[in-house]
Length: 359
Image (tube, rainbow, N blue to C red; front, side):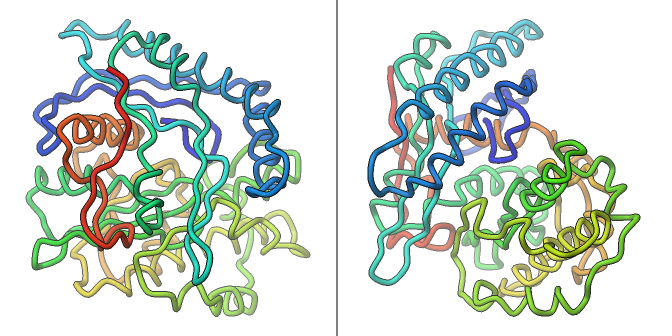
């Protein structure tokens, strides 16, 4: 799995029938080099400029696909080098999301993940499941989030149906298993995306290391009030976002530290606004994804949420590998023809399967 933060390829092995997680295997992380990250960012920028209108930026996309294939193959090799168990029977690869448009009245949704499927299948040399979002969007769904099927399996293992899973990537999304057993999931707003963009804009790295910048600044409360009045927060779930629907421009005019603090606080309060939309109040929120490494973000969440906040590790999960595990799980569901999205997760009219299999 390679997320919109463009930091690394994560790989994980699980033993699953697509309904339960029976065992956890090896994990691996293959960090992007600065040059590789630049290629992926160029493709993302080109996709946003194109926005499904005019000439497709094929050159930028081709360069990105080559990077994606090479880095995923390297992550897979790294994964197997530390594994003494059975050889993998199936791989699930998501591809790199460079553009996502949620459906609106009069405008269908659209989503684009860059992947060279034949090259990836050849590089991994195992049956490959991919293209997980297209069927959902074509059926009128948001195309995201797709991890809830896996989050539900993790919650089942945990034995706490009242917990809510929070993924903090470029965008934040939550999964809740409701009292009646149904799944409800949606994007709550930005997570790391605007913070990372803000730090990069100032030329001091790719993210707020240990939340030091946010902790050194002060959030602009007046600006937060304006930001939280955005129509997004009044839209009913399910709903999804593109990584750039909320950008670093929200902090324009502030100092580096105050801007970081404001963006961090905004992301946390956006999560709280999403949790408030759930019909059942969760007993706790379990934070996964890169944002859980940011103490300032976790502190802001603890202030904003009406329940306990714990990390994936505190729940006994492998926090850095959950997204990779999720697409392994979805690959198994694809093979078995099981649903991967539901009316309560992406807004599709009925539960549908998805994914394409290259045997």
